[in-house]
Length: 261
Ligand SMILES: NC(=O)c1ccc[n+]([C@@H]2O[C@H](COP(=O)([O-])OP(=O)(O)OC[C@H]3O[C@@H](n4cnc5c(N)ncnc54)[C@H](OP(=O)(O)O)[C@@H]3O)[C@@H](O)[C@H]2O)c1
Image (cartoon, rainbow, N blue to C red; front, side, top):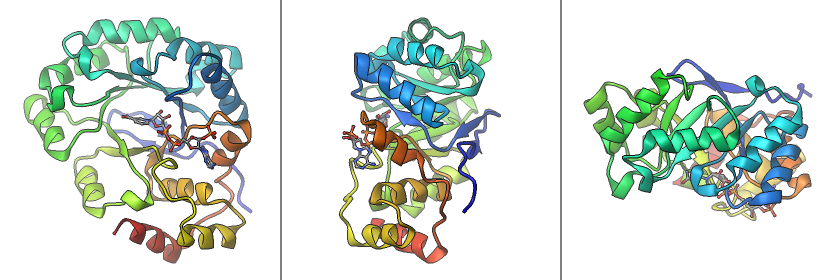
């Protein structure tokens, strides 16, 4: 058995490394956000995903501070709501204040504002990066064409695109398009949008003595996709992180990829 580790990371074009598995906090409010993040950090997660829109940045920040895990050892992502386009700088300042940190590790445009790429918003993101308020910048829910629009306007590609992703949504072309632009793929809703009772998943899970959820998360890690499962149940937070002691065979990866066909 290989040693369990939380240190599997992927490099971003901005020169920082992001842990491949993070803890998602959407719909974790108040105490649930605090308890969830405390549990995740205790278990070994070193990457937390939040957003202005989740209204839990204060609880996430408190949990990180109280955890005793140094700020420098936790990768924090937050996101700017599309409705705040034009007010980017004050939005990030509010996130930093609520989180109680001097900088975040990754700041994302949560959705294309009004369905548009908005290069002006992206310019404000580049400024925040240059000011050291965030270590990397990216987008979420952007199409390839919208990413190209940002690059055409500024010469700078987002380091990462956070999109809905799982084996059932696997799209080789999307992967190749992002890779060719050096944009890391981060998947969200990996479990919620998957059929956990699928027979291929069950078969592979049984072969490794793992659950279907663990197979899905391991599939992300082996592809180099960042993944951010969320749970408010301590056992499942633990289960979702317990994926570093097994490996999928090439044939198993192919079978999982084929679920997206
Ligand atoms: N950028 C965006 O637009 C966007 C959109 C959606 C999500 N996100 C981010 O991505 C994160 C993850 O996505 P998500 O929260 O939508 O969904 P998810 O992580 O795919 O699924 C969460 C659901 O799955 C259950 N679950 C967790 N672990 C499980 C396991 N091992 N077995 C069975 N069920 C399990 C949870 O229930 P319990 O709590 O009861 O365990 C919860 O109902 C979010 O929290 C957020 O940080 C970003």
